Image (cartoon, rainbow, N blue to C red; front, side):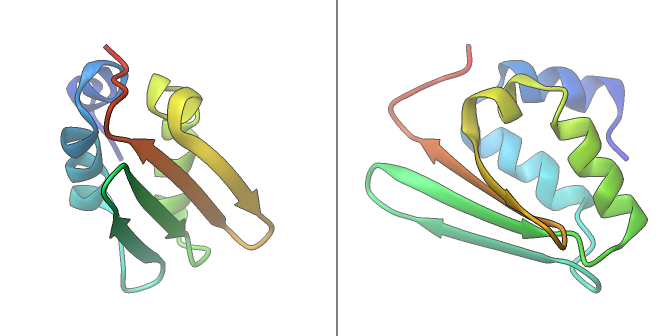
Length: 91
C-alpha cells in the first residue's frame, strides 16, 4: 500500500517518479507490470492478478491526479492501461 507521501507525489510528481512509486509496490508474482516507452509517451499496462495488494494500489491510484490525467482503459479481470504523455505534466 502507498503511504501518504507517495500519494502526494502521485498528484504532483513527474511521470517517471510516479512510475517508480508504482513499481516499488506492485507484486509481479501475481500481476503484471508492462511498460513501453516511445518518443512522445509511455504506455503502462497493469494487471492485478487478483492479488489484494495490487487491487489496493489501483484503488489508491484511482483517487489521484495520476489517474485523472493518465488513465486510458480498464477491463474486467484487473487490467488497467495508462498513457503518460512526456510533454504534459500534472504539476
